[in-house]
Picture 1 (cartoon, helix red, strand yellow):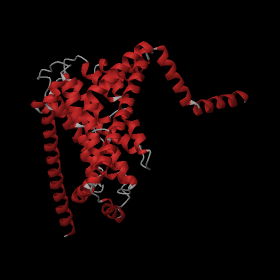
Picture 2: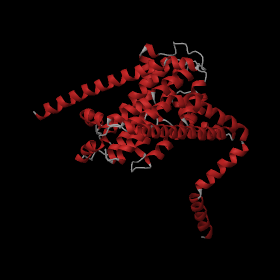
Picture 3: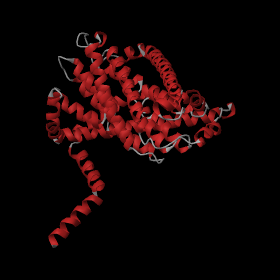
Picture 4: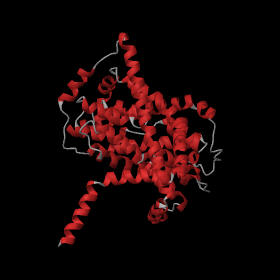
Length: 403
């Protein structure tokens, strides 16, 4: 009897002090594997400075500037007839969706959290929006992943296309999430309360706050990349990564994925950017496998970004559950769409297209910068036209049922 009581006490004590034990082990591992960790820290910071900061910081600042205007209200009123029947969210969600696509992680979640704090959406609507509006941006997918990591623009365009198709699919699926709630008139009345235009006499203050918030967000992302880069280094140095790869090897065999990708997949599940680099660097006869795995990782986004989103939505009453389910589904849908496009559309069959140098220069990324922007705007325009067409069809069907 005493042994049972002692065992229960030990278990309870471990649960209560789990984080303390983990943090102490992390500190100890930093000291033990200091040489390997130094290299991992330099690589993570280099990846953040050279790829993430140039891609995301300008959009973070631009998004902050737009938050001082009434553009969200204008888009909300304009697209409410589209967003409500298709995604079961208020029209203002279109602003979060568009900015989430253009700016990348974690802008979509940040905007949705602000909507919830201002009462522009219900808790259920906020969770639906959270599931599909927080996405990887075009400059990261096309510029960093496609051009910098794979050395091919077509790879980036393919991954971006399937990434957006997957998030739209998740949005349509999640229209049934907690569907017993009906929108109230307070949401629409709050639109009018949020109408505002920036004043020129406050321009300096607006710019200062926007730049400050943008820098804070990019530093936060850099901290997560560094932290998880060190965690991956510790797992490799302690051979724990090898043990983990053995556990997922049966799943990889079923999916016909070579064992060499196991470390890259696990690293991507922990931290997206480092995982994508590892997967893209693996030599393989069929480059399509590398691309499909990257499509899944981009859709899922990784635990690092998950924790970033959790820290953002902690300011509201939104649940992280919808986001986790939504990102897992997006990863699966993105992988499926990528597989279909590669195998059924010759233009995307990259096994027939030579992939050139992995270390493409920054000048090549700059060369495609404006082309990427044009592609994004063109794609968003097509998406809005598609939603308008879909809404028209739904409206006609509803009228025919009534009559």
